[in-house]
Image 1 (tube, one colour):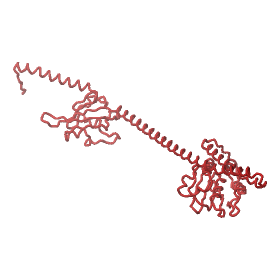
Image 2 (image 1 turned 135 degrees about the horizontal axis):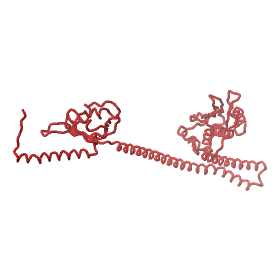
Image 3 (image 1 turned 135 degrees about the vertical axis):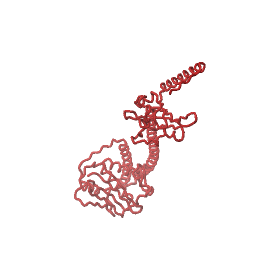
Image 4 (image 1 turned 90 degrees about the vertical axis):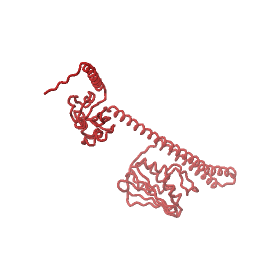
Length: 405
């Protein structure tokens, strides 16, 4: 049986405006929800949608009518960014049901109806009734695809800038190091030129002075000896100038390489037959088990390589101690070794041994420019070869040159 409640006219009149006011407020709230650009939806304690605004529905590709009463976790929060399942128990949105705390998340994704995902930032705020009991939660979210893109662009730009800064810093450090090396090289060069040119110039000056002073008293053969001394000193200075010019050509990359077929056995034998390499007490011994070793090399560069190595061996080896020039062919390489039993090279000098103008600690009393080994290494590299050195102070040194054959 239906009961009918009757309100006095005065109360009915008062209730009508109240109902209108409530309807007005409901419409205002609905208009606000519809106008907001962020996605907003409400969930009950079972995780089902109680309300959703058009922005939220549009972002995930559903209609508002389709979403009401559905489990929002199953609709758009079912998987992690990598596609693996996202258990509801681990979802921060539902944690609000348990402890009543607000959750703000910035590193997850929501999924659209078409199966695509997009990065989101969201806040899950618990809802309570008049008695303070949890009745659900309100979730506000926004699509941060553009922000993520901008962040990635900014990150790439920062990484590129950092890389450029590092590269530029490395370039500046390398340039500073090169300037220091050039400064050191210039100092060594000036010192070498002053020292090495002073001696032959002094010799020439003394010889010319003697010739002028004793011209009438000297026999013809004595005058010839004086002239030979002048000529030897001029040749020594000329060789130093030539070496400096060669270093300049190498650094300017204008030195030409002209390879041609050579029989290295005959080449080495002819080289040792020259007067510069004769040692009466201990002749240089040539060792090669093959009758012929063919290679396509630049004869001028090869002559300079061996001449410098042999001259050094003679200069730094006592006249009664042996020197060897050894030749072999191994795995497509011509192996040339100049071995001596001389004074050896200190360990501290070996790292800079092939630097221009560098001279060892134990050779300061022996004439030399410090250019020979630098030229040797450059000439070897110009012919796609390598050079190595082993040495022991007081026991001798071996230079090993490997060249294509």
